[in-house]
Length: 188
Ligand code: GRF
Image 1 (tube, protein in one colour):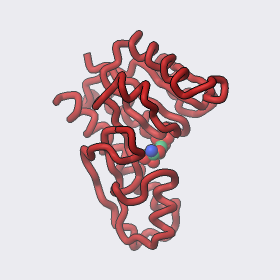
Image 2: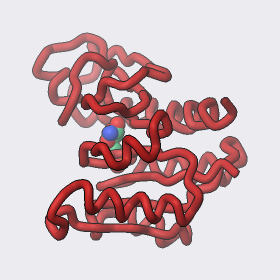
Image 3: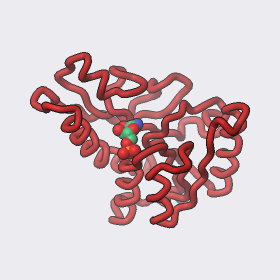
Image 4: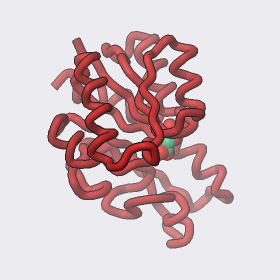
């Protein structure tokens, strides 16, 4: 089956890379659902364009994370989702989803974890004057950006002059790495 759900909150370039890797037959999977906490984000437009069902919500309309995650779980069940792929989803996954999808949630993070966990990992690397940073794909657990690492790719940033240049190179890595890791995980 290989039914996956992608969670995204923003631009959705990784979401698009996964869509494209399926279209080109590199990745044998079906994106059954996009989940987003930002009802107006570009990732949702991409989903509409590709006829991918969307579940969007505003966290502030729910009294707790548990309640909106229960709603998400219902959607995941409806579409027989086997793997959750976080692609720029800006919320911490709570107990409800972690329990329902134990060992079945992947995330991509723009640093070589365990370095630069949390928000703005690229900014953290710049402030730190890092020579090398990179991208990590890992499983999600209860601790932020701390689950088992599946794959990492490093990037030498000593010759990159601006934040923009670094972001561009990080994204190039991400768009290749994420479909590759999803393929590996799905194929077992
Ligand atoms: C990526 O850099 C990813 O590593 C991080 O959020 C960003 C999402 O970018 N988790 P996009 O929305 O896929 O373009």
